[in-house]
Structures are given as C-alpha cells and as structure tokens.
Image 1: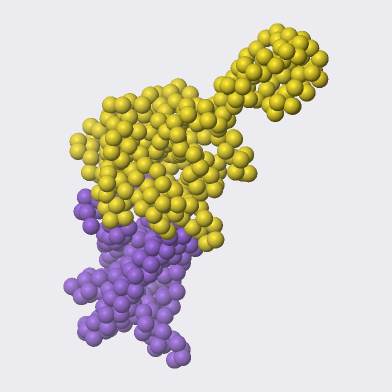
Image 2 (image 1 turned 180 degrees about the vertical axis):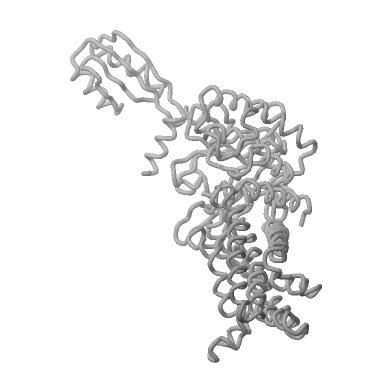
Length: 307
Length: 260
C-alpha cells in the first residue's frame, strides 16, 4: 500500500457530555480496504457522518488525497462516494432518473452510457424505469451501489453495503469490491456486521469501542492475538479427572456430554493439554479444533469493554 | 455556485413534480378549486357592489404568489427528508446554497405556471383581468416572491434544526401573515391597536398599492419602495437564520439524522 488516500487524525465528536468519537486516528492507503468494526454505539456512524461532511467534527482533521476535507470539501466529494444498505434515493424518481441526477452532480462524462453500464452490472435493467419506492430493499441496495460507482470514485465509504441482499448477489458484490480494489486501486472504508465478509475483504481492521480505536491489525493477526481455539475432545475417563485438570490449568470448559468437552484455549496450549491429560490416564478417542474467527475477536473486545 | 448542479437540481424538481400526485394536488388542484370558489363568491358580491368582486380575486392571486413560492422552497426539502434521500443528496458535491437557489428558481417556474393558468381562467370564467395591473405586476410579483423566499428560508432553517417535528409550518406558518397583510380588505379594516402589525409585512404595501391601482389607476410608488426595502430585510434575516440553523444542525448531528 502506498500513499494515504484518507488520513484521519485525532478526530473527535462530542454530543453534550457524551464523547461519541474520542481522538481517533487512522489512515487508508491507495487500494486498501479498511474494516471499521464495533458494536452498536461504538461511534462508527458518527465517524462516517464526519467523513462524509454531514456532521462537523469538534476536533482533529480529515484529509483526503492529501487535502484538508474542510477546505476542499466539494472537490473531494467529487472523488469519493458512499454506499449503504440503509441509504435511500428520492422515492418519487425512477431508478434511471435518480442515477441521472447524481451523475449530473458528479459531472460524469458520457453519463447515459455510464448509467447503462451500471444498470447492467447490478442486473436492474427491468427495474430501471420504475419509481425507486416500488423496489424491494435488495433492489434499492443495488441501485445505491450503482450510484456509489457513478463517478468512478477513488475512495468508497461502505456502511453495511450487502445487508438485505441475497447470498448470490452478496457474492457478486464482494467480487466486485475486490475487483475495484485490485484493478482500479479504489480505497475502501468498510463496515459490516458480517465478520466473514470483513475477513474476506479487508486488508486491515480497526475496532472501535466507546468512541476509541482499541485495536488495528490484519484480520489474521487479530485472530491470532486475541481469538482462542475451540478444542472438542471426546475421551474415556472419569469426567471429574478431566474437569479438575482443565479448571486447574485455567482453560474454560463446557461438558457437552460426560465424555465430550469443549475447551477454549490458545492454539499453542493444545499439545500440553493433550500431554497432561494422557499423563492422567485419559484416553482421547477423538479430537477436533475450531480456529478463532474475527467474530470471536469482536465478541472478546465487546465483552472486555463491558458492552 | 455550480450551474451544472443547479441544472441537475431543477431537473430533479421537474421529475419529482411530474411523479408526485401530492405536489400536483397541493400546487394546482387546491389552488384551482379555491380560485373557482373565490370567483363565484366575487360574482355574487359584484351584483351589489361591482368594485368588490375583482378586489377579492386580485387579493387571492397576489396571495397565491406568496403561498406557492414559499411552499415550493420549503416542501421540496421535506420531500427529501420523507424519502430518506436527504443524506444521499448532501454527500454528493452539492452545497446547501445551490439547493436553496435551485428551489427558488423552481418556485418561480411553478408559481408562474399556476398563476398564469389562473389568469387565463379568471379572464375566461369571471371576466377578471389580472394583467390590468400592467408591467407594475412585475415589481409586485418580485416583492411577493422575495417574501415567499424569506418565509421559505426561515421555515427551511427550522426544519433543518428541528426536523419533521415542525413540518406543518411548511403549510401553515405563512398564514400568520394573511390576516395582517390587507390581502382581502384594507388596513383600515383592522382594529386600530393592531394596524401597526400590517406595516411590518411587505405584502401589505403590495396589496394596498395594487388595490389602489385597480380602482383609480394610480400606483403608490412609495409603498412599492417600502415593500421592497422591508422585503429585502426579511430575505437577509431569513438567509442568515437558515445558515445559522444549518451550521448548528451540523454541529449537533441533527443534520445527519434528518436522513434517518
């Protein structure tokens, strides 16, 4: 990743006594996808609103393409765009009319051709001349995505862009996002509650909690650092022997049956646990492991921050 | 101010008006029905007092310039809020000033279309000639339209700051001025104690001068000048008020929440 397309420094937003965003800093390089994750109320929406210029920050700075957002707002807005499953366009305009209006705002060259390309890309040809309010939520999301690509943005902010879409369309959208990243070097700020999607798409993930960024790393490193492996053991021995050992060793255990236990532990501790159980005369009859996921990291951070 | 953005916003307004039955009914249907009612009442009144009927229709048409102008500026903002498209619009490279100017232009077009049609209807159905005012109709209309802008900007500012809680002001607030603005009767008809209120409304000066012109052919130029000056003060004050509400709503986060 090369130069920063978006650089956020000490961004702060306070609503009365409530500190919604607390001196956060992060940057996104060219062609990089950064996942912004966090539980409800963590400050994601306020951050995005400030990044889009809808809400004024109380402190800190936002720079796109090296330029200050406050002083170059309109020229920057022409080069970025936003998509969200919760965004809407004017309900009393048709899909094509909405796209035409936004295309005129962005001064898109060969606008009608671009509109047709996007209508085809998002498979909404048969709905193109329907009023926006006649569309299903999934169709609306596809139109919003088409709107977001109208100006061939260099930076895209995507707030749960695939919520409400069918799995086959989600897959296509994810492939499209990957293609935008790889071929057109589009930088993306991505939020989602679907951790699989985040793990699949994002180069880095920033966890936001109570207005602060508490962790930033690649999805893989985060799961390694924080996530714990689930070890499922079936055994032949007295349950009390296994239970006492696991308790003593400090590994949380959940007995599904009297001869089947799920142990949560770091991956590197697995050999020693197996060795010690063998020493206690426990005969392991089967063993499966489940690798930690980004979802585990999410839950871990949320619990740790008492949310 | 980017003219391409204003052109896009005008096209947006055209698309919306042609698709929205509510807007068509509010702008055209209600106005036409009310004009017919006023026309018929004026016919009845004219049987005994021929000079009163035309005055009623004159007041109606001049008042409608204010009402339609203000409605167009304000309700277009509400439509974006109701559509939840407000945020999409303002994260595009469009400024609030471009939005306001485009709605002002759209208001002129809509008002001209409605008042123009009623002028023809008035001539055909009630032998009432609105154009009898001649070219002075232009300064009258400019003052009334500017006052409509002032009211529209003020109410838009309130909507930006307080959201749809006060949305009925978009239709109702302007009527505060109707009883005190000598629309259908002269200022002298008001109780002495509240007559001064009439003179804080620029509409009063237009109405009084237009009535005088209708009955005597004379134009009260000093009233036109006072009306224009008062109106300019309202427009400037309303513009600053709206800008202040916009700044405050962006600071408090209310602006972003308008689109939720």
